[in-house]
Length: 443
Image: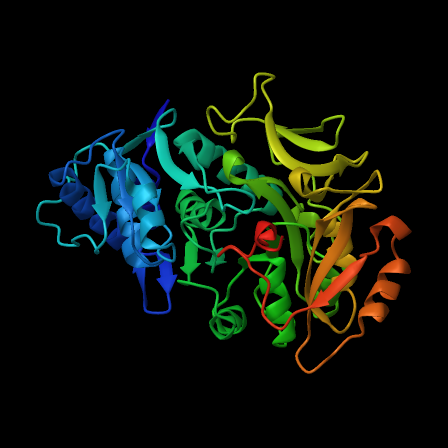
């Protein structure tokens, strides 16, 4: 199916409206469309054409958005690359790309695509290649189509609403689906994406307090940092959409007490970001689950507890032979259809024949007032097979007793879930740029 290009449509309908706002400047839809047409002409001269992969190696901001939309106007496949990767890692990702954009494209209208040249998207065609965050293995490429992106945006709007005054703050990496989808769906809605190159707590606090931000995408770590900094009752915020892994219940209660409306979401790259999301009517309460599946997305739980996903947001080739995307995540569905995520299937600790979900133990540890963050994993043990072990980072200026932390866990958890060993650490836990815990680096 062929549809009008999203940027062309936004420029025609809301040309003067701000498309992208960054700390260094902003850009209207009319200007972004002109810049993207000029960039598309430049990419074409470099050998980009429909179906050809183009690596985008630019910081998050206006130039990145121009290059992304230039690819889309051409029908080339955009491959965002995380600039924080080591050079050999970037080279591996870019190896299959015919063109590499490592400097801003031209913005001059000279040589731009003709204004009367139809600007369309083929919904069946590949739009972007996103690499997974690599929490449990090396990053893998996932090819997402225009249809995947469109259905994801439509499903998100059904769950959360989409006012024409929306201003969605993105401080997530644009090389990952959670960040990139904010730019894409804002274009589909013809609303504003407020883009920061990285999460910096002072800049995000300022945006939430003074720049009429209505949505922000966070992970548990960044939500905690904002609350620690004193965020309370952000004036225009409708939702702090938080995902990227289980979110501790105590953190959600802190946000509720501070007047920060939190919505939980669960998703993954292979499903083009969101799979389930707290409905807009429930935002502002203390959420207890990631909500029901998005519009036209189906979720079921396998006999072993694995979350399975089906629907138009699932990347082509990502589903197994049974037609379902096997996510590798564990969870449960309530009678209401709301999804509760408990952790990664591969992270499960088998201790004395009992299954232990690390995320459950981490949530209890992080509810302790002296604990900043915690990581739980299994260590080989002659008696238990795997012994539940924890690394705890205390809050600044505190020194919790190890036995008190174990006793704290024992008050909320079954004995086999209580860590046999707790180690205090001064350095932050290893995480991906999107905030996910790199558990494999703890072993």
